[in-house]
Image (cartoon, rainbow, N blue to C red; front, side):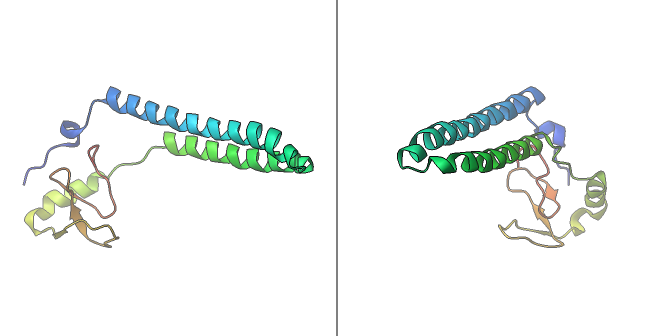
Length: 134
């Protein structure tokens, strides 16, 4: 069988880059809105209004520490290389040919079984997203 190459199915690199940038910008807006809402609205207005002003420094340090760690984790995950299916897999698929047992993809883990992608006509290793489409 002949499957389309990864390059033939992939959207252009500029489109992928700008989609990733738009996603990161939207996420950053949510992160900073959350920081503003907590620090300005809750800590400066609500806690003092209910007579809990002595808790503001403790809550500020705890929240901002967790917030900064979350922001850093998101940044690291966003810019990390997701990896790729190794070339050995594609060589194995070519060698196995029609003898390769392929099962339908399910939502649960299928250890030791190759699945057939629903979005592009190619077999993939277990738990793998092997192309830009899926």
